[in-house]
Structure formats: C-alpha cells, structure tokens
Image 1 (cartoon, rainbow, N blue to C red):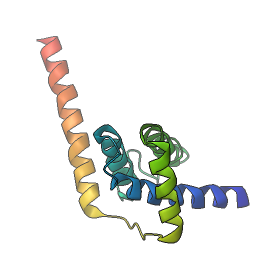
Image 2 (image 1 turned 135 degrees about the vertical axis):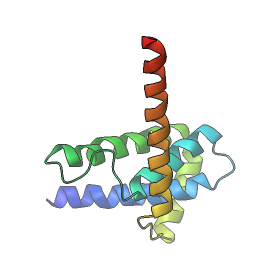
Image 3 (image 1 turned 90 degrees about the vertical axis):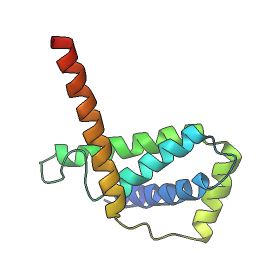
Image 4 (image 1 turned 60 degrees about the horizontal axis):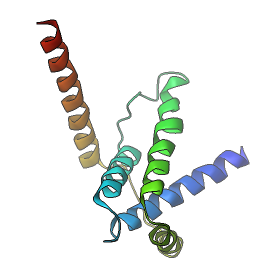
Amino acid sequence: MEKLKARAKRLKSEVTALYYAAQDSRVPWTAKGVILFALGYALSPIDLIPDFIPVIGYLDDLLILPALIALALRLIPAEVMAAARERAAREPVSLRKNWLFASLFVLFWIAILSAVVLALLKAFN
C-alpha cells in the first residue's frame, strides 16, 4: 500500500511539473498539446471508462494517464523538464477537478465519435 501511495504522490508531482513545463517557450507545440490533453484528462471529473465499473473503471486511470504523461515526458527537452520538476518541488500547485476541462474532453470525444460514425456511414453507402 505504501508503494501505491508513493507512486500516486510521484504522479501528482509529475502532473504539476508538466503544468510548469507547458509554460516554457522551449517546449514544442506537439508536447504542449499532449500536456494539455494529459492535464485535461487528469483534472477532468469525467473518465473515458467510469470508475463505478468494477476493475475496468480504474484501468483507464492506471494505463491512460501514465501513458499520456510518459509521452509528454518524451517530447519535452530534458533541461526544461528538470527545471519544471524543481519548480514543482518549490511551488506545488493545487490542481483541482475542472468542469471546463471536462466539457472540452466531452466535446473532444463527441467529435471523435461523430467522425467515426460519419466514416462508417460513408463506407457502407
């Protein structure tokens, strides 16, 4: 249980560091997009798979969020990430659930679902 608590604390610290890294002008726009998506997903009260579904509900939090963070970390220059981690240690930010991010996240999934439905309709016509 202590291992899980330590990993959760590290994950929260990495999310805060990503927030600070996104503000750096040396970070490419692709990384900023991934960071925005990762932060939106982390702070959104709406999950891809609802948490009330046994086992699978928490699977997205255990797989998707760490994968997004890992992708963002690969796209950020090492010196920028080191500075962001230092700043996160000095200046922790309270990143709360945000309904604006949740709304944007829902709109994103509606757009993807609409595109898939349109593609399927075109394919079968």
